[in-house]
Length: 145
Image (cartoon, rainbow, N blue to C red; front, side):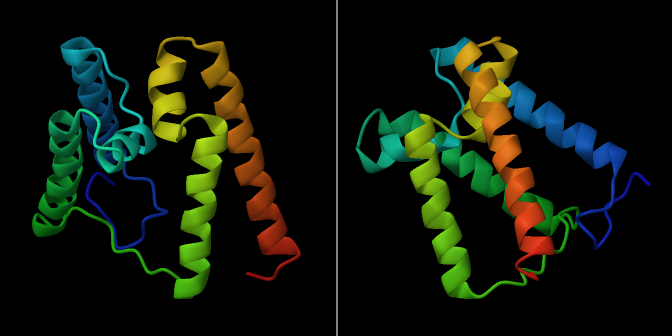
């Protein structure tokens, strides 16, 4: 099925390919254009710290506009979060702490670092995936979520 479905867990090759191409092209253009890595945590962190804000705000604006456009064109999946606001806030804070400890996030390490064959990014990405698998296993089998 090439068109989106109301279930974000269903595989839609066309949208996956389009999304992957957009991520790859935007990451490549940022790297080739200004020599910066498209790591979202670093980009947002730079905005907060008021470092090179113009390109960072433009990049973040592009992310927001793409999401709004996807919703307007009815190609964004409908996502229903089944967690409380305090749990979501706690999860977001833990992700922030993890990106600080890991020296970057999945977009910086997983997309940009792996494409450059960075040993640090390979290690970080393996760690991200291993921890994610463990957390899903624990929450689904032991935690009852």
